[in-house]
Length: 275
Length: 267
Image 1 (cartoon, helix red, strand yellow):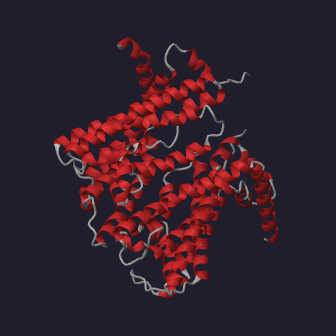
Image 2 (cartoon, chains in turn purple, orange):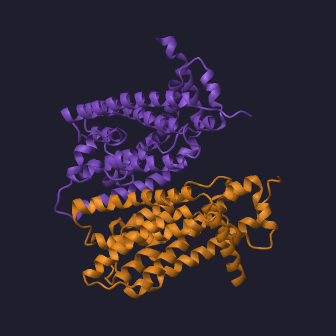
Image 3 (tube, rainbow over the protein chains, first blue to last red):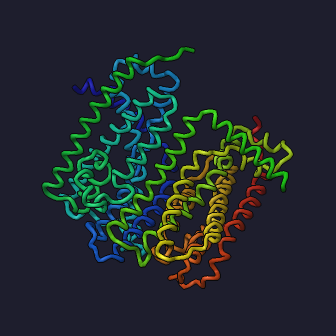
């Protein structure tokens, strides 16, 4: 088993080291994310304050939700692995097919490293800023709270792992779709827009109308932001927490299966132009 | 001036015809832009649906703020493609070619590529605005439409100024700075709601750094004909949109200064 995982791990390590070079770019994005975080959080709190209707999230849970969403924004399937996309476009994918490793696993390992390292480079400074600096400079109302309990923290870490696996599985589906179309603009515009709504990145999912909740709770994109964040803030506990994690794990299996199937079909009809 | 305008219209029409060569991709682009940006209104609608009101503002009033902000950003977006590509033009030496022509670089970049797919956001904003205005009209409210148009114009100038400044920065950094997105995309997100809902210290960013408070918020409040909760007199809102074109003028001066210091990569 260890021997078989070897090449995929090597691919993961190599991409991870490569992505770690882009630390400055991640910091440049941080300012924009902080501004967005404040706009969203102040808007939500203004709505809470002007209504008799109680919010399903407390103010503290909302702050946790908004900053976690900003910290995890890198997991949103905005784009596909640029290296793999370029290889599909130029035909270098033919070389990848010659490698004695599964193409799906090879791509998955690369995309996973790319996504997790990029996200981590934004996640850590965002947490430090919202969790440590904001309370220090007198912005307690807007600060990121600590996880409600040690159990919540542990659930959160499990959910983060699933979130990274899920995000990569969605990315892979988009990446495989590139084999069918030369101009992927459609996929690359629509998927992120849908994902930002259904993951909770635009509005916390519990604030959507009640009649939508049964659907929102079972769809896969919830696992990207909503599940880890609500486990962290103690909004999901006990059976609801277990069920949310089960759904995420189930979707990882289903989406990886779909991705493998689509890729094997894509490879069968793949024609690499010579030159 | 008339000559410059004629030339610019010619640039625009060339760009328009070239994009119509790929008709399907053109339509998909506009429809996609429409849907993707309309998602922002889903958030506004969801929150009003659950909470009913926002510090005394109704959904239909917020729709006016929303429409003005999105129409302003979309107009600037439509004109700014050339400045978005400034970094690339500098790296590749394409800017040298523009400098050789007997016209200002600003004119040439404004007509560089008239990305019509960005009309999707404009259409989306104008539909939301029209819907809000109709509902307010039914409720007996009279809106000042010329002032709303002035707010869109002023906001468009302000956003365009920011895109020009980002282009100018790329003369030195060769990479467009993501920080400017906080002012442009952050700005449209902030300005789609009335500025009263933000805390005073945060509002300062959109008052002094990026003056959306003056350029879109005050004119819209005046156009709605209601007293400003922030206490600015109503007559002020009739004129503050002029700060938008003033910022654009300033940004163009800075761009020209930057171009004067530009050294070609020598390709």
